[in-house]
Length: 108
Image (cartoon, rainbow, N blue to C red):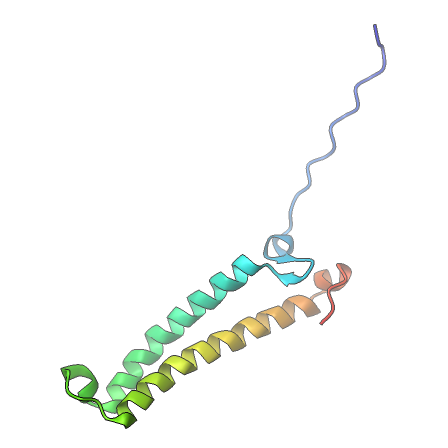
């Protein structure tokens, strides 16, 4: 019979919050997509009613919309996408500049 002691199992590795959200290349893709979609929908939910209240009745009643009304509505949508893109870029920059990112060798 073999009297050598069994090797103990390796200790369990505990993930930090930074490791869950960020990988070796920065923010993980799934989290980035989720953050973008949530921020886009929140901005759209805020800006769309604001733009509609500012442009008047033709956007509400089904009348023919003038080019100015269409431009205002589209500008609200474009602003929500641009704001979400800016927010995601700022989050990426913060993750890359964080001490945990520097330890892992992530460079901007």
